[in-house]
Length: 303
Length: 297
Image (cartoon, rainbow over all chains, first blue to last red; front, side, top):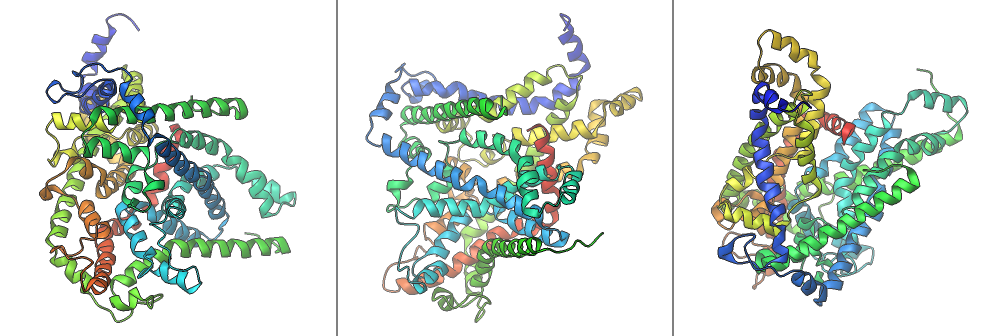
């Protein structure tokens, strides 16, 4: 770039600058200023001194968190819920896409797709509300079914052993269809000639799935898997928060809900920021680790 | 098409496939269908598990209660306003920016893109963001639903990729020779060519606003500004079904609970209806949206 050319292009491109200025302003104010405010995790919060004016405390609040009696439970719950979601929830859309891709009749495929995408658009409140009314042991339909097949009177939402399965399965129910879209898109790019030559070679449809469809999905799978590992400690706040009750709290209290309670409810801003930052750091370590592993193993990586 | 000969393997495959599809279809559609029939059936029959396939002893008690509940109306009005205004602002901020970032002659585009994408991976976290909103006096105002985070970087990338692939640079150059400025080109050429894109992104933003509950949970205290989702939480989860406050408990606890459930089924329908009405019209664009996004994403 020639020196001074920026001003030259600025004059030429001033309309472009005007069109992008609002977006720059909004991203700067609402994304970058809070990033700068992260130093709150290392400072005391003082109402009159603002976000970054308090006394420097170093790692005090991090130590407080690591030493707190809740630390291991929070970490364990967060890991366990996200790991279960990934292990059970990650393959579901892949399998669904492979199934949907096999449907030959166009109308049928359309109907299936319309149906499986639909739950994605239901709000989390409505989903948790549905769980509450459907799973209620006294009046819910699932409660009645469980009673009639002799499983007894269990409140699935209020027991520590059933909370996580309920959480994960309802998550799959809601998002599996939507998440399959990207795999379906990848399957639609497979060269049709491959299918024809497979047919000539006498391959059945199981073999086509095994040797053509699945390999076509592998790059997408790897990328999405790395991304989901990078979110290992960021379980969806909203759903867990809404599903929490006094009885399932021992397994349902996760870092995100704890940050909300400490920060927004009890106003311990510095402590809550430190916990939040700790969470982000762990996510990053996982993201980079997975990326490095995948680069070695499969030559696919995010960066 | 040549009709292929069916061998044993193919027949077995088709049976398994049909069975799986039927299972998936029922697992997803039945709970939704059940909510619909439960909301218009007699609540005693629903709560004793007698309503399974068809509505029985149709009663609109739940809906009557809902329509008399002032909270639901206020919430509805607020949500409709936040959704409309919010989506408009979203598009107004996102589309021009995406157009600019799609222009190859725009020198700063790589740097700006990088700075935008960075925010997808880094953020200040809940507390610094909350304190910033407080300092800006956005808490407890409708603005907090509309202005902050009105540019979603993921949708911005989708839009930019779309503009890059549908607007060849010769098109603008030709128009520029005729004295067409970027403003005019964007409004008169780029936007009319992007109806599919605007529908997809508009729908994503719209559903996001409609279902948004987090913003209100964190930033809104006054009942006056509460959106529908917060009211829904009160009704569905905190069991404050009747505006008077009587939900469960007391002598008539079981009785009240049955009616409460019918109101819950009804309120699920009432709050989800607008999305469900839009859904079939826009469904054909979803895949296109994901495809456009996945080229670069």
